[in-house]
Image (tube, rainbow, N blue to C red):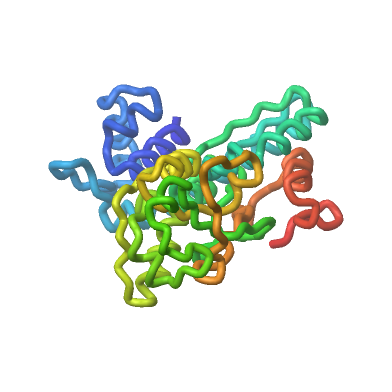
Length: 305
């Protein structure tokens, strides 16, 4: 029961809202508040302040939260070890990754893994924001994550395994309407001036693009903010604007009606890498999965720390 209270505490802190925590945990809101009350009575401390929009951790609650995450992560590691001792039929792993990785990179890896572990149970948390993926890994809800390299990593190990060029995507219709623009020789100032269709601001690719414009004191003309590379490509194809994406989805589909122009010299390469806790226990099955994803990550059956 105590572990359930800790999990309720951690999930409530994540959403800063008891109602959303209840939905995630498949409990009633009264059950969530009751478990938090029991935890507060156990420690003799107030963990949350209530306000109109939800809840906020107290200073004491914030200090206890880090330890609660470590305890839950340790319990998950024990469960993983126990399953590995039972054999391959009890293998279970969880991954947190961006939708592009989930769609374009992981399917072949998962297929290869399941030929070795036929009874494996795999959970994939698909997220848009790197911070959400890092949070899932640090709390132990995900065994490892896949995030972009455009981050600062603390208290967590990051290993980049692939990188992609950044590409400007212009529809044939839009190019026909603007014949005087030399698309292959655009300056950064000229890119900022065209109507742009970009990812939402929380997306790491968008944040990296915005950072480059800010460093050059430019204000890009963003007319549409929307998620998903396929959507960005379609909007560019029909002439709604010009998109900037990584080359990841371009390796897996034929693009018609869109001119794709490398702009890596302005925005840099977008790397993707594996993240995991420094103290994470890795079962043989998890090591096998990561060795399929990137053979260079595993050396003599071990991962770098």
